Amino acid sequence: MWCAVHVKSGRESQMETFVSKLLSEDIGTQCFHLTRYRRKKYGGKWQTVQENILPGYVFITTDKPEQIHRKLKTAEKPGILWGDDEYVATLDGREADLMERITDNKKPGEIALSQIVVEKDGEIRVLSGPLLQVEDMVKKFDFHKRVAEIETDFMGQKKVLYLGIEFE
Image (cartoon, rainbow, N blue to C red; front, side):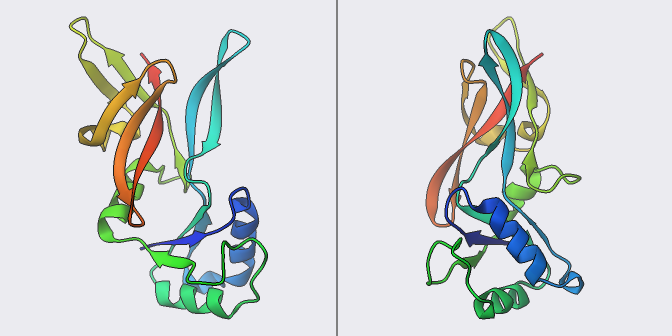
């Protein structure tokens, strides 16, 4: 099960450290923020960079979300949380399924580059990477920015996730 903690943008790493210290290992959690790899051109050369994909959110995977919520609610609130209201939410099954499909199992929270090829007839074929799992959700390929746009509902809002692509 996935829980989302709403934090001030730019404070995701601090929240991860706070949660890791607060939660005992017996709860069996992983805490991370989502990052994607993508290609950017600097000085005429293509570089692979890692970027935060959902600023302001830290995710906790656990089998005991009620314990997580209780511990975070009773802890002294650091200045990294977004507000005093409810700031921990459990993702619904569809949202959690999407996150599990696009993230790397070995590196929690990381979204790898997807390899694509443009056929002679103009058809785009995904060869590898997270886009294989969500090909039907791709709304647009932006070859200039080297991203694929995935539109989804997330935490009650429409969100567009930009996943990195690389040409074969």
